[in-house]
Image (cartoon, rainbow, N blue to C red; front, side):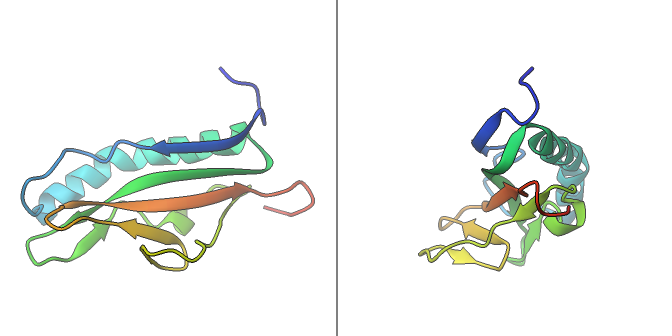
Length: 127
């Protein structure tokens, strides 16, 4: 076990669920969410414990594509972000992005990656 606030940076690709060779059924997406949400919530809480103030984390979360081409996110990041972490806005990139995430996809891919950047708030900032 690593000591509290002992890490300045974390870069990882978490488990994205099963590889898909065709679009996902909505009921399967709901099952994937039920299985993976607790894993990612635990990861976020561990980041708060491990990251030094000002430390950063970059990681991927899954998005699933259904038969209509609609993408379904694992979770709403801001809704589950523990106190002490904040989302860092992506910088200019060739990847598609929203204010919170970068989205990486390849043609014919049914598990898309959300690339998330977080930062442990400095001590002088309130959670």
